[in-house]
Length: 501
Image 1 (tube, rainbow, N blue to C red):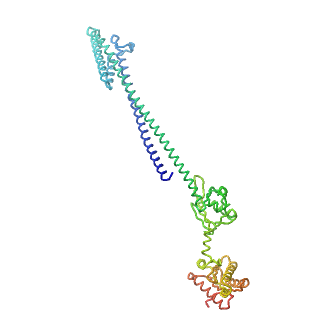
Image 2: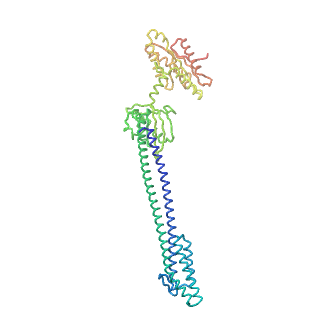
Image 3: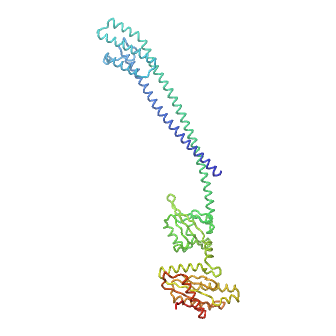
């Protein structure tokens, strides 16, 4: 799958996943509201039904507590010592009737309740007349007969009230069943959405995992395609991963390099020092170059060849583990180019531009630290005659021989450069005039004895013990050249120290 198409598919899956999450949240929230409403309505309806049922039970209980002649139903026969008084009985009866009238009754139930209320009024009237007469007279007897004739209507009224209660309870139960079915449906829809969401998340996870695997493969290919050497190691100096360039640079296979100690890739004389430096490395990133701060970074090939290197080291932490990443570059091609730019092709001495830079650096250092500096101008005597009679190849060989002799004979701190033609310049730091002159005379004498072309050389020497900031390189070169002219004029084959006199 191409990358743009993959990104489009991934974006669509993400949008669908987000949409499914939103819908799932809304449905879940709606279901929760419905459940809460269902529980609240069920509790309210249950309280109403229980209250109405309790009132009906109390009503029938109160009606059954009338005197035997007036009892509607034989629910309860109170004992004489617990029989309530007439006033207490009527107060309880009317309280129950008022509470029933406050309920949300249907039209038939309201009429039935009116019948019960009328019966209670007749019964109260009978009780009032009986209490006033003290005995049962003709009026109370007639009233009692009237009450008995109302018993059938009273039973029907009570039955109507009970049936209304049962009807409302059935309707409430049916409504709650419908609500419960709706909740179950919505809950099933929520489960379906959850299943769809899980499938989408699995698809997204699969595609992201596939993309990560592909990215890891591409990263490995890119890792091996990088021309610079890449090397990973842990805090103990064990190599954990390398690229192909690393194997080519050091001559080991990747399997051989992994788990190898880092110090095994450098000469033995540097291993102990490098282990100490590695253990104390706490920088975030550091570049170390060949010759920087006096430190040469040298690698060791599997065949024993030493390799000048340029190394960039980065320190990183994953969890509690510390790792080092090294970017290593082989400096041999660069050094070869540098040598070509700095060295004279024929004599392999520094060329004129490089020796001038070296002289400038040494002059600056001598002025800064108040140290001596000497400069020698060397010239082959009668070189033109050799070149004209023997040919340029012999002349080139003579120059090559002279350069090799001077390299072997000067000090390690001295620098030799070809000034032009058969002239060479030697920069001698920290050497006084007397020592410089003796050194030049030794060179003249030794060259006279060893060269195979019966040539001699003349040397002009200039030296300064305490240099001032006003001295220029051209001035020192000019003084050495003047001293060389004096040596030529004095008969050649000698060394002369420059003097203003």
